[in-house]
Amino acid sequence: MISREEIFAYVKDKYHIEPDYPWVRTPNYAIFRHKTNRKWFGAIVDITEDKLGLGGNKLIDILLVKCDPVLIGSLRNEGGILPAYHMNKEHWITILLDGTYPKESMFTLIGLSYDLTK
Image (cartoon, rainbow, N blue to C red; front, side, top):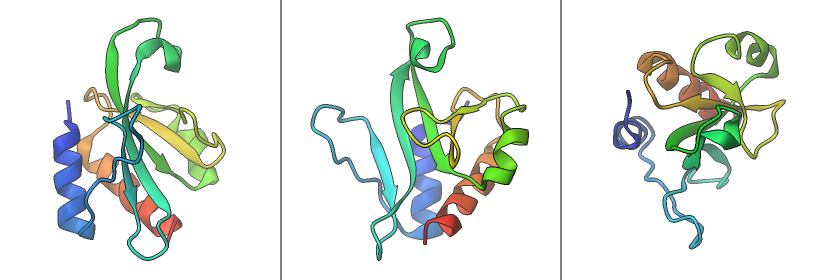
């Protein structure tokens, strides 16, 4: 399992960016934005499993990142990767923070999202 704090620390160390919390109604929704163009390159949100079609009502953390559409099809075949929650499913993916997807691979996808949105 990877915690949201580990991702916050990685993004701060690598990109010098702190999470942004733009919504009062969802105070745990953390957004990563570029400093210059303010575009999102990631988001960590907590939602119930049923919103992802996982058949439960437990609250879980997920990471949303932008991804090259060419890669999305093959990534969705890997454990821990799902279609994007509440984002364009052609360009974004959901990564479960439950440990099913490797941390280093997750960091690679954060980097890809960062590059795609600058």
